Image (cartoon, rainbow over all chains, first blue to last red; front, side, top):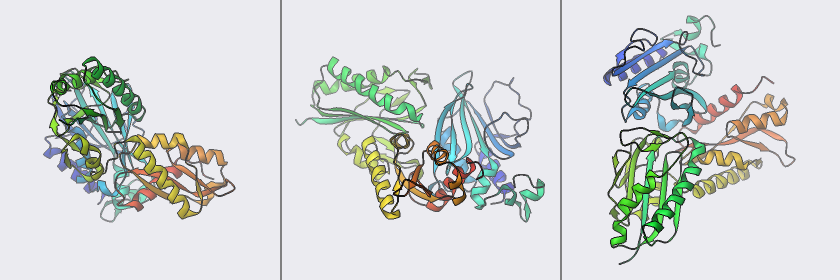
Length: 164
Length: 267
């Protein structure tokens, strides 16, 4: 699946869950404390460091966190073309000061993070996915520069050798 | 009336691996105190833990008035758990390191009714997550371990440890090479997988030029096992465990190799 198709599929999946699509770092600032369901792909620049490789993230914020938040995360991977049964998925717990969560490892490498953030009532769930990692697995490629972005256009061509 | 066994399972979101064993030990101690304080006669009290569940198993509890006390006794035991990093995830105020998603409690084939952590006890649980959402119905406490095994979960810590040791030994025979089954690495894997499946993969020969201890440390950091010949010389292979079923082994082997090589300096 092309990298841009992965983004489309994730957008569709999360809008079906009732999320508003908004590139993270856009509007809907921290002053808005009401219920919120946000999703979108964004460039890492300007986002807090998350220890993932690559330039692009898919971020989702569910506030308040539904009981099925983790299941939604797993389902969105399937929507993006990842067959869970064909891979090893691990949840390594961490506590980073903002809240308890997990680094999610896909076949041994970081794929994303899932964090429960204390909110006014209960918790919010924040999810981050490394889009390059997801595309590497989906396209069975070794180097980020070889990833198909859209059709014949590669990630390498778009980014002038970045990630090669 | 024959005495029957009692099962209590707490199904949660993945627990920090370091907390499972202490939590199981605490659960055992509190259960022993609870049974004795309530005067409920019983046989052996055991507890088990995986990355997603804690299980209390008590043998030989006679039916009758004492058994009725179980629906007070068990929530009492749960309420006294004091685990590091525990938080209140829902309004009931029950504290646990990660959100609790299911409670099952049976005495023989009878449900023990109570609520805790905002959930009512049932007789269903989840199998391994890699199999997709699949609810398992527990016919009786005595059938718990077998039912879970059919759902690709080895609940008993010792079953998982034996499975891992056995898998490493047979992989070692197949390769005619030694697998360094470091105890600490085995114990880390114990609480990272509900159903450990062995993975053996190779890495680039070039990395053998690195100091052997550097390479061993990198492998252990990832909870992988070094492979060496009779003279203790490292070979360009490693063994590891994945969690779940053995489909797509190739994907996992390639992924584990990439994760290892990414963490090593160019040789």
